[in-house]
Length: 147
Image 1 (tube, helix red, strand yellow):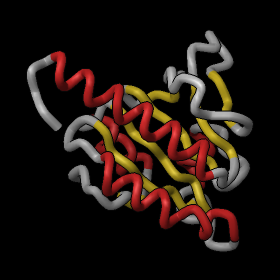
Image 2 (cartoon, rainbow, N blue to C red):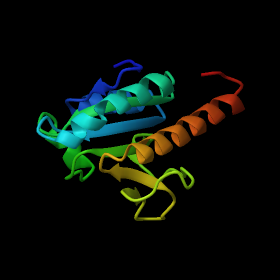
Image 3 (cartoon, rainbow, N blue to C red):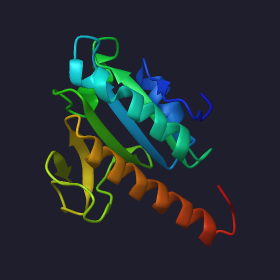
Image 4 (cartoon, rainbow, N blue to C red):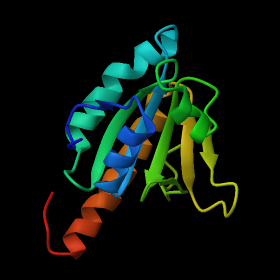
């Protein structure tokens, strides 16, 4: 499953493993067809994916919780929309600065940063995605690579 500027649909845990094995950062949008807030924020998520995808570094994907309940269960997602941030395939806290207010869930183990956003607040989503994209770009620059 190649990294695409359009969020990839994840249907199986195997799809998830393929995407996480080829990208350090992955931003997942957990949604449902029956969820009006999910439909309202979907165009923004697609726009952010188009603007910030970095091949083999930062990918975006969508998880329909009714079609892929095992992926939602793996991360304990029970409310939609939920945006989950993975680092090296795991939900780890990411320092996104002060750009996210309300709805953000920090890592319960170490409180080392944002793990997920619950709800369809566009400011929170934009702030988190921009911070993660900046982190991914900085890592590339430190290696002498470009996005």
